[in-house]
Structures are given as C-alpha cells and as structure tokens.
Amino acid sequence: MSRTIKVVVVSGSLRNPSRTHGLLEALAERLQARLDVELHWVRIADLAGSLAGSLERDTASPALLPHLQAIETADLIIAGSPVYRASYTGLFKHLFDLVDYQALKGVPVLLAATGGGERHALVIDHQLRPLFAFFQAHTLPYGLYATVDAFTEHRLADPAQLERIERALDPVVAFFCGAAAHAA
Image (cartoon, rainbow, N blue to C red; front, side, top):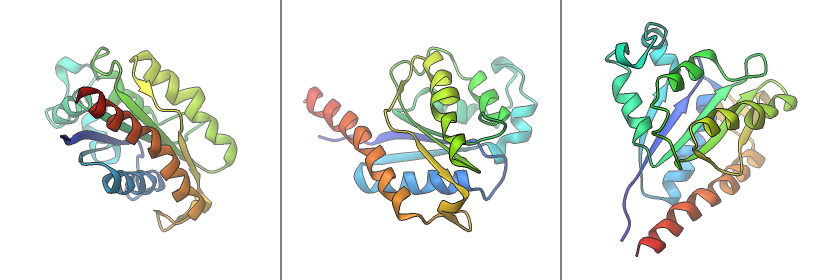
C-alpha cells in the first residue's frame, strides 16, 4: 500500500527563469519518475513582494499562508537557492523565518544550490545544513550544486549533473520506501 508523498519545492531565486529553478525542476521530474508525489512549488521570485511586507507570521500576507502551511505539513522538502555572497538569498531565509520552528522536526530535506564557481558549493554544508538543523529537520546526505556551465538556457543539460540527481534521490526513495515497508 503506497501513499502520495507531499513534496514542497522551494526555489530561492529572485529571478524567473533561473538556473536554480531549472535544477529544482530536473530534481522534481526525476523524483516524480521514482515515487508517487504531489508537488507544491514555492517560488521566491513570485512571492518577493508578499515576503518583504511580512515581518512576522501573525501578520504574514494572505498570499504566503498556503505556502507556509504547505512547508509545515510537507513529507519532503526540496530547498534550493542561488549563492549570493557565500550564502542563500535573504528572502529565502526570510521565508523560513516565518515557518513554525517545530514543524519540520524529522522532515527529510534535500538541499540544492547554484552558483558561478565550484567554491560556492560549500553553501550547502556551511549555510543550508545549519539552517535546517535549527528546525531539527533531517537533511539528506547528498546536496546538489550546479554551476553556470551545467545549463543551457536555464535548463539543466550536464549529463554528470543528471547522474548526481539520481544518486541524490536514492536516499529519498530509501527513506520513503523503508518507511512504507516498516509501516506494513
């Protein structure tokens, strides 16, 4: 007996289209090929005005509430951001400032980032993992990082990156298939 997995994909890019969104789309497509998932997209580029005007959860814009609720009830979060000055975008962080700090305990999170050079890949371990550790989320072992060279017109085109996506999804599939087998 399988159930649909609620997946929230958070694209921290301030632009649309973007390479970050392209990486996350490739991830989501491959995940859909492997598991029964229901996707909910949170695109910072589309919510920038609502986010900037929402200083606290109690006064958050009505446009943000469905996205915050989706994050807080997700079975899996895929979170990605472009690298800006060695970190994720400010509005990406602000979105998570509005999330209930207890809602993500034990929730698996797959991390992704895009940047101009290979050294920016450190953002996954030095910025994104600590953010989700605060929430006591379960960050999955493989993060995905892609540079400008991996894309053609904002679409992921590098075969090596596509292979990395498959490897990064293996623990996701094991997490949910193992949980289903344990429940049965």
